[in-house]
Image (cartoon, rainbow, N blue to C red; front, top):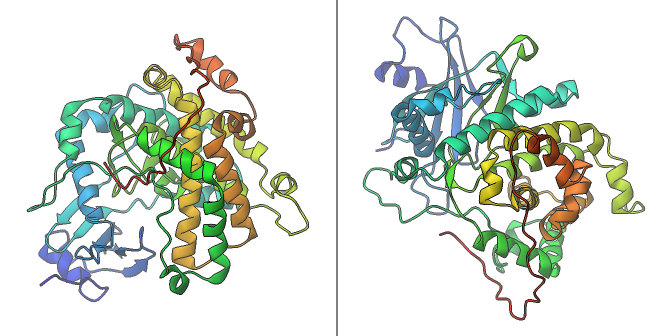
Length: 419
């Protein structure tokens, strides 16, 4: 029988697991909002002021839920133990730690325990509270994300390790996250609020949008270890970041990590930055989209220096990615658009919420996906060549090859669900 954790039995569980003694006790136990809808999270403060984050995946047996999120985070922890070079990518001026700080994993009960970093706060909260967007932080993230991708790029030993399956199971392949909106079934009318149905109507009207997502999915080529959920709330910044030479930030929540496409990580992170801008729009039926975007309470111009610093730091640390994919920047832009669509879907299914601001977000997402070359100038405020120019002075970057202008005479609407 699977143990169900609660604030009443968590201390006894930690004692039985040897993570604390009976003398430790606990000064505080508080339930936290789960990192996903499938997890129960409990923050435990022990008598010596140590803090442990205890997570339990509640519906591992539910076939409709993403399986084994906590197993995946534990697997990443094991990867760092097996290949310590990954946790010590020190060839960079600003260090970011990936370490998940896992101290215990109970596969039978799907319980994971890790140290809680009291001196850090989520980057999303830092940005919200301070309303500043330091380029140093963005550069640190870009540099070390590139370090992770570069260190594992096309390395078979890492790929094979990430293929490890939970006990008694077998993995046939890696999930392709480049997915659009699934088929609309009649049941949707009982689960989605009436206002939110407009999202599905608009989505189906944009045939070019579905085609662009299908192209992303069919061209998805996993080549390195990826985080796959790199949002601002999964990045921690130290409370004294200005005074530290390194360890400015930490990347956390590796429950979705796998062998994947590096552009997906960078695109998801870019979408998280764009979300700050899009969620501050002044939206009114009498105002068109272009005016709303310019009236945002957090203008895109304020975010652009950090966004540019993020991309430049990434490319500077991993210039080879442009030899591998000369269209890398465009793919990052497209994955950012896809991440915005996924965010709208999560709001509809989770919060049962959809309004005019979300319609603006959908239209921006469509532009990013269908015309990424033009969107580069809008999002960054400078052209792709200007983004890469400072990097080109350090590294010999390849010139992108222009594709022949061919007319597609046939297109099959594919809905890829994995690979």
